Image: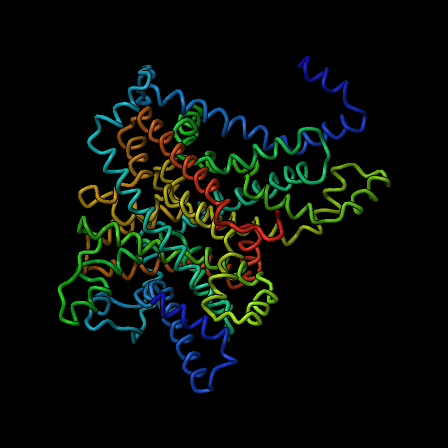
Length: 305
Length: 301
């Protein structure tokens, strides 16, 4: 209170009037930040140091949850492997495919917005609905994909019930919802100045050289953006894997977010779940920082020194 | 597939130098690649709709039936009444989607104005914190928020999902702030000289100009809440409160246990179609808003 008073006195009248209006306008966010972000953030840090089942009071354990997870947990490293597998394949493949599709859409074609619409729609359709369709399509007994495979004389493929195939199947399903990335890439490609291509043509560059030396450098900021958003999203992916495989078969699709949900709301291990959440948060922060750091070497911000 | 795509596009850039024959070839390659990709993206949803129109033997027939004749339109009615989907639709629309859209649009507009158009000391630092909150995975705040809402007695109500939306969403605050900043300062200054208050400027000058941006916010919020599965899964476990997203999963369990009997799968596909339809219709009605919204801010749908 007093410090605010001192600060206010130092401000000119118009400045303090601005401050009051400013705080007035942002007050919903400020209250929400304190109540729905800052408090839960601190509380989850505390819970991660306890054993808490919602019924009895939290028991303080120190770092035992973390130590147990890293050294003495039968599932943790498997969950980590599953998640890294999923993220490591779905993000680069999804972004690479999105970029190529966007390049194709950016060439001289008739009906661009039709194609773009069809590719974009799967990414906004309710995940529950698309999960139902994929469950049905990939079903081993009466799924359409296996119907085609068996009618060609091959064995039916247990896409979701085989521990080796379940993760790749989920990667394929995730690539189907890359439409938003396609739209973002397409917008970026359309922003590349035509004069650059003309200059490259004058210099005798062929199509591949133009793609390599004009298109890609000019879109690197958007590639970085999509990489970061894709990574954060894939790391937290819950709904579609949960509905398709519920972590199975044999825990092969037990991803981080699923494992966390299971611990919190099925086993009611709030302390362990909070520790998992903080580990996830740390991984995301570290990875994002690494990407930003290395981005100075490969991201080109046009015109900036 | 990918290399094919690449050659197709790059060839086209240089088509002027090529013979007409080669040019026609590359055009053919380009459009075949496009149709192939479009087919892959469209097929699952196409299959959802045609399966919704089949009856039990048709749906498993080999080779697969592409377009069922006769079409069994009554699957939509039968699937819909198999569980109380009417109540769930009312829950989804009136208890969840509409309040969340209202709350998000109102609060985010208000906050964005404070960050974009009012000058005050410390504004940029506070805005930076607001942007940082976007990095925070929802899992970190999930457990304490659940405990808080449980202590408030809010489990099995839509309050945990609706109330936070009235406190602004960082994504949309960012989006609206960018938009407000593009509105010339002279307009607000002129109004200030005429004695308008900041609130008056927001309501009379900024809001009428910001309608396209508000449409983007409303549209994306509608989609997020309509599609949200995890939030209701955590907070709602009484059947009569279910939103559609939870109901469809219940129907899936019935289908899994019934397998090839009782038209369970056609019904599941029919109800999935009905639930996806508002989103698809919204897309076709507001395609421009969608595309501009995503490409401007990079927000994913």
